[in-house]
Image (cartoon, rainbow, N blue to C red; front, side, top):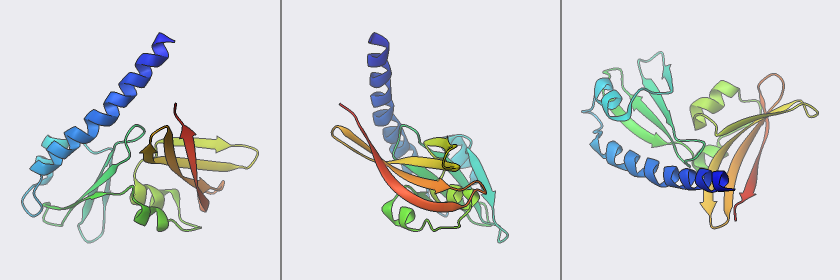
Length: 161
Protein backbone atom coordinates (compact mmCIF):
# COMPACT_ATOMS: atom_id res chain seq x y z
CA UNK A 1 0.00 0.00 0.00
CA UNK A 2 2.76 2.43 0.97
CA UNK A 3 4.73 1.48 -2.14
CA UNK A 4 1.71 2.27 -4.34
CA UNK A 5 1.25 5.64 -2.59
CA UNK A 6 4.87 6.64 -3.21
CA UNK A 7 4.73 5.49 -6.82
CA UNK A 8 1.65 7.68 -7.36
CA UNK A 9 3.29 10.60 -5.58
CA UNK A 10 6.44 10.30 -7.69
CA UNK A 11 4.38 10.06 -10.87
CA UNK A 12 2.47 13.22 -9.94
CA UNK A 13 5.66 15.12 -9.13
CA UNK A 14 7.21 14.09 -12.45
CA UNK A 15 4.11 15.34 -14.29
CA UNK A 16 4.58 18.73 -12.60
CA UNK A 17 8.38 19.04 -12.69
CA UNK A 18 9.10 17.90 -16.28
CA UNK A 19 6.90 20.49 -18.00
CA UNK A 20 8.25 23.20 -15.70
CA UNK A 21 11.84 22.29 -16.61
CA UNK A 22 10.93 22.13 -20.29
CA UNK A 23 9.38 25.59 -20.10
CA UNK A 24 12.55 27.05 -18.63
CA UNK A 25 14.81 25.20 -21.08
CA UNK A 26 12.71 25.93 -24.16
CA UNK A 27 12.77 29.66 -23.40
CA UNK A 28 16.55 29.53 -23.79
CA UNK A 29 16.27 28.25 -27.37
CA UNK A 30 16.16 30.92 -30.08
CA UNK A 31 15.06 30.06 -33.65
CA UNK A 32 17.65 31.17 -36.19
CA UNK A 33 20.29 31.55 -33.49
CA UNK A 34 20.54 28.36 -31.38
CA UNK A 35 22.78 25.65 -32.86
CA UNK A 36 22.70 21.85 -32.64
CA UNK A 37 25.19 22.01 -29.78
CA UNK A 38 23.17 24.68 -27.94
CA UNK A 39 20.10 22.46 -28.05
CA UNK A 40 22.05 19.39 -26.95
CA UNK A 41 23.57 21.35 -24.06
CA UNK A 42 20.16 22.60 -22.91
CA UNK A 43 17.87 19.64 -23.68
CA UNK A 44 20.31 16.73 -23.61
CA UNK A 45 20.65 14.11 -26.32
CA UNK A 46 17.57 13.41 -28.45
CA UNK A 47 15.87 10.02 -28.23
CA UNK A 48 15.56 9.85 -32.01
CA UNK A 49 16.98 11.78 -34.95
CA UNK A 50 15.77 12.07 -38.54
CA UNK A 51 17.68 13.60 -41.45
CA UNK A 52 15.79 14.68 -44.57
CA UNK A 53 17.30 14.88 -48.09
CA UNK A 54 17.08 18.70 -48.03
CA UNK A 55 19.44 18.87 -45.03
CA UNK A 56 16.70 19.42 -42.44
CA UNK A 57 17.28 17.56 -39.19
CA UNK A 58 14.61 16.70 -36.61
CA UNK A 59 15.36 15.66 -33.03
CA UNK A 60 12.76 13.99 -30.84
CA UNK A 61 12.33 14.74 -27.13
CA UNK A 62 9.49 12.59 -25.75
CA UNK A 63 7.98 13.29 -22.35
CA UNK A 64 5.89 10.13 -22.27
CA UNK A 65 4.69 8.06 -20.50
CA UNK A 66 4.09 10.56 -17.69
CA UNK A 67 3.81 13.74 -19.72
CA UNK A 68 1.23 14.85 -22.26
CA UNK A 69 3.79 16.45 -24.57
CA UNK A 70 6.40 15.23 -27.05
CA UNK A 71 8.71 17.75 -28.69
CA UNK A 72 10.17 17.71 -32.18
CA UNK A 73 13.01 20.18 -32.59
CA UNK A 74 13.74 21.03 -36.22
CA UNK A 75 17.02 22.39 -37.59
CA UNK A 76 17.58 23.86 -41.03
CA UNK A 77 20.39 22.80 -43.38
CA UNK A 78 22.51 25.48 -41.69
CA UNK A 79 22.23 23.45 -38.42
CA UNK A 80 20.42 26.31 -36.70
CA UNK A 81 17.17 25.87 -34.81
CA UNK A 82 14.20 26.37 -37.08
CA UNK A 83 11.28 25.43 -34.77
CA UNK A 84 10.15 23.58 -31.68
CA UNK A 85 6.87 21.69 -32.04
CA UNK A 86 4.75 20.03 -29.38
CA UNK A 87 3.35 17.18 -31.46
CA UNK A 88 0.73 15.60 -29.18
CA UNK A 89 -2.14 17.72 -30.45
CA UNK A 90 -5.64 17.15 -31.79
CA UNK A 91 -4.42 18.50 -35.13
CA UNK A 92 -1.71 15.83 -35.38
CA UNK A 93 -4.02 13.08 -34.10
CA UNK A 94 -6.38 13.99 -36.98
CA UNK A 95 -3.50 13.55 -39.48
CA UNK A 96 -3.21 9.81 -38.71
CA UNK A 97 -4.56 7.86 -41.67
CA UNK A 98 -5.19 4.20 -42.44
CA UNK A 99 -2.17 2.62 -44.12
CA UNK A 100 0.47 4.85 -42.52
CA UNK A 101 3.60 3.05 -41.28
CA UNK A 102 4.97 2.89 -37.75
CA UNK A 103 7.84 5.13 -38.85
CA UNK A 104 5.42 7.76 -40.16
CA UNK A 105 3.49 7.69 -36.89
CA UNK A 106 6.68 7.95 -34.84
CA UNK A 107 7.77 11.00 -36.83
CA UNK A 108 4.34 12.56 -36.45
CA UNK A 109 3.64 11.90 -32.75
CA UNK A 110 6.95 10.87 -31.21
CA UNK A 111 7.60 7.97 -28.90
CA UNK A 112 4.40 6.38 -27.58
CA UNK A 113 3.69 6.10 -23.87
CA UNK A 114 2.88 2.40 -24.20
CA UNK A 115 3.09 -0.35 -26.82
CA UNK A 116 0.80 -3.38 -26.52
CA UNK A 117 0.16 -6.46 -28.60
CA UNK A 118 -3.19 -8.25 -28.77
CA UNK A 119 -2.55 -11.73 -30.20
CA UNK A 120 -6.19 -12.68 -30.82
CA UNK A 121 -6.71 -9.56 -32.94
CA UNK A 122 -3.15 -9.71 -34.29
CA UNK A 123 -2.96 -6.02 -33.53
CA UNK A 124 -0.27 -3.77 -32.10
CA UNK A 125 -1.49 -0.64 -30.28
CA UNK A 126 0.55 2.41 -29.43
CA UNK A 127 -0.88 5.06 -27.13
CA UNK A 128 -0.07 8.59 -26.02
CA UNK A 129 -1.48 10.36 -23.00
CA UNK A 130 -3.57 13.13 -24.53
CA UNK A 131 -5.15 14.92 -21.57
CA UNK A 132 -5.59 14.71 -17.85
CA UNK A 133 -8.80 15.69 -16.11
CA UNK A 134 -9.76 15.29 -12.47
CA UNK A 135 -10.13 11.55 -11.95
CA UNK A 136 -9.44 10.70 -15.61
CA UNK A 137 -6.46 10.23 -17.92
CA UNK A 138 -7.21 10.10 -21.66
CA UNK A 139 -5.16 8.31 -24.30
CA UNK A 140 -5.02 8.54 -28.09
CA UNK A 141 -4.46 5.06 -29.56
CA UNK A 142 -3.12 3.97 -32.94
CA UNK A 143 -3.83 0.37 -33.99
CA UNK A 144 -1.42 -1.40 -36.38
CA UNK A 145 -1.80 -4.67 -38.26
CA UNK A 146 0.88 -7.37 -38.37
CA UNK A 147 2.61 -5.51 -41.23
CA UNK A 148 2.98 -2.34 -39.14
CA UNK A 149 0.30 -0.37 -40.99
CA UNK A 150 -2.37 1.74 -39.30
CA UNK A 151 -5.80 0.11 -39.39
CA UNK A 152 -7.61 2.56 -37.10
CA UNK A 153 -7.37 4.98 -34.19
CA UNK A 154 -9.32 5.19 -30.97
CA UNK A 155 -9.45 7.00 -27.65
CA UNK A 156 -9.51 5.43 -24.23
CA UNK A 157 -9.42 6.57 -20.65
CA UNK A 158 -8.06 5.36 -17.37
CA UNK A 159 -10.09 6.41 -14.33
CA UNK A 160 -7.83 7.64 -11.55
CA UNK A 161 -9.36 8.10 -8.16
